[in-house]
Image (cartoon, rainbow, N blue to C red; front, side):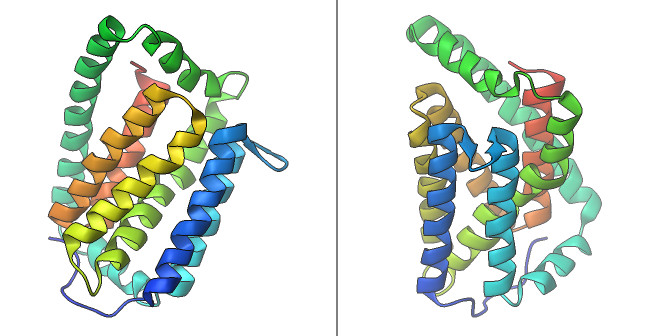
Amino acid sequence: MGLSGGRSGPKPWLVASSGALAATLFIALFRYRKLGPFDFWGGLAASIAIVVALGFVLDRGYRRRLREDLCSGFLRKTGIGIASVAALYAVFAVGRAAALKIFPFAASGIGSVYALKSGVPLIRVVVLIGLVIGPGEELFWRGFLQENAAAGTSRAYGFILATLLYAAVHLASGNIMLILAAAVCGVFWGWLYLRFRSPLLNIISHTLWDLLIFVVRPL
């Protein structure tokens, strides 16, 4: 139900360079909570737009693979994506309860994540998540980076590399709870892509998750 089989992608050094650029942008963003003239949300959207555009330039077969993905099993992928959000929410609900009991810093760490919305119009958060951030993160981290890191090596290697880098860029925030959350989400969405190899499925899962956790029903 995912993408077609073996293929040749961009040269490894180009994939590595795109990962390095993404790491630079995201580390700066999480460190300073802004990027140049942009606030956190604007900086996040701009960073994602840059690396996604770069991914399409470097990987000439990306558009074709996305079209194939969209035309295959749309309803099934949507259903799995929605179910995955429910499963991830349950995991985080249990993890939050445990963290609040075990770690004295958990409450402030979680509060710092939600403080990113402070003073930002809710409609702006919704639009950026729904149209740029949710879809764009999966288009880059899994659909481009994980997919192309696996080309010529193994799908497991692509999963490990993309997951480690996705979690690592959050280290700059200094927020242990955010880092742990990113690690869990990175493993989850990386596995989802490893299992189904469908950018569409991952986009549905990630976008609905972000909207649920930041807008509809924060934990």
